[in-house]
Image 1 (cartoon, protein in one colour):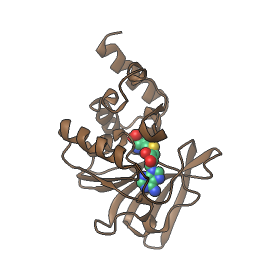
Image 2 (image 1 turned 120 degrees about the horizontal axis):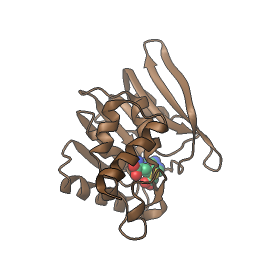
Image 3 (image 1 turned 60 degrees about the horizontal axis):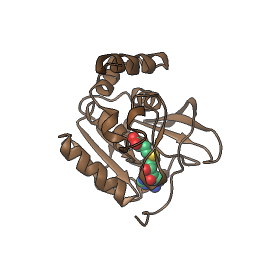
Image 4 (image 1 turned 45 degrees about the horizontal axis):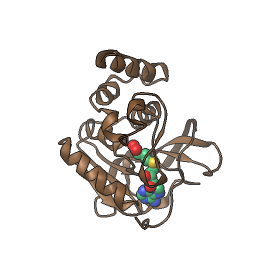
Length: 213
Ligand code: SAH
């Protein structure tokens, strides 16, 4: 299959799964997932709509889930975005093409370092990678216009809710890690928080503390 055909098929798969926002599709077209997939047996599968294993026992999300979460965030050009769970850096790279500034937090030092190097190599200069426990958010950079969590917690972490701007939106999977989880969208209003359930998903669990490697 030629490069062009592969790209067409990738975009077609995204559309057929409900990713219809043209800005999101363009950002994903411009972000080569092969750069974020570990070299070796999985390189050839970078354009398939499935999650793949990365270092530290973690996974790079399925492209359609990245697309649907990004679409649900409804990012505006001037937004400052926080991602919890850098993993491969793929989701952050897509966010970086839509927002003014992206902060992404990862508890595995190795994944954070690799993502940082990759963003440098790809010249994605508006993304900052931080090693840490993202469930505390980033008080120094708060508030955020948009927050995305790419690991599942039982409930939305309180510090993240409090670091959302008024009118701000957070998209995250909630539920037990050994069960099917719900992707939800939380909007902060002047009266409190609105919650919407979007679809069923499966993510690795949100873990406490910084990992050993
Ligand atoms: N967004 C990623 C998918 C990451 S999988 C991508 O595009 O590839 C979820 C990631 O969340 C894992 O790398 C895991 O180590 C990380 N994680 C889990 N709990 C965390 C926490 N409390 N703080 C920061 N990162 C966390």
